[in-house]
Image 1 (spheres, rainbow, N blue to C red):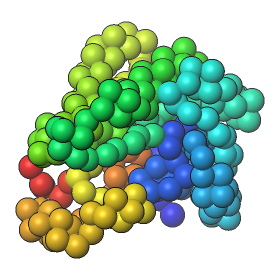
Image 2 (tube, rainbow, N blue to C red):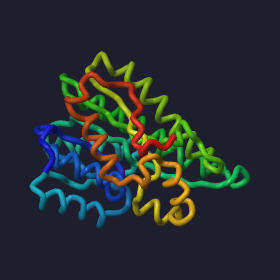
Image 3 (tube, helix red, strand yellow):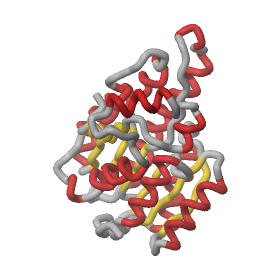
Amino acid sequence: MSQQKLAGKVALVTGASKGIGAGIAKELAAQGAAVVVNYASSEQDAAKVVAEIIVAGGKAIAVRGSVALAADVERLVAAAHTAYGRLDILVNNAGVYAFGPLESVTAEGVRAMFDVNVTGLLLASQAAAAAFPAEGGSIVNIGSVVGELPPGGAAVYASTKGAVNTITRSLAKELGPRKIRVNAVNPGATATEGFASAGLHGDFSQMIVGLTPLGRLGEAADIAKAVAFLASDDAGWITGSLLDAAGGWR
């Protein structure tokens, strides 16, 4: 069991039914936070995450909603207050991705990715910042190393993550006077269900491992521990930072 560095805190983790988001939700709960596990469609997966947290002695509820819809975002924040009476931490993890050459780009595809990865992040941050207590709060955005190291075939996705970096630095300056810290954790290639379903195992995975000084893919737990640190008082003097969690891949 991790140290209870988040005891008494309430966290909302978007896109937390599987993969990195599920790992983050479980780690924050292990460190003492009550967690709102947001999901867009995977109700069964979200229920499993909540059950694992409760069995381990933590507190969690699952709430459906799309971060791209302002009304859903308001409902997520309201659910945190209804269940636990406050909100202290927002982890903007919900995201979608697709890769392909320039000729495959469509206006609809661009909008779909920006709606979740950028607009959704802004709407959730707006709602959470308004709901944080007078003593402030912490927003942790989940970006990607591709925000600064975009590979070919990732122009749309990488641009959304570049936007996450920019938003993180801007909101840190804007919200700092309200004692709200804003940071980003930028994972590299991470072994998740989504990574597998996107067909990124095999040769691509081996190439990434070969370029990673620590010699392996990331795990959800690797990202979750970095998020928990930034959400905690141990990071009380850190805001506007972009923390790569990629095993040294740059």
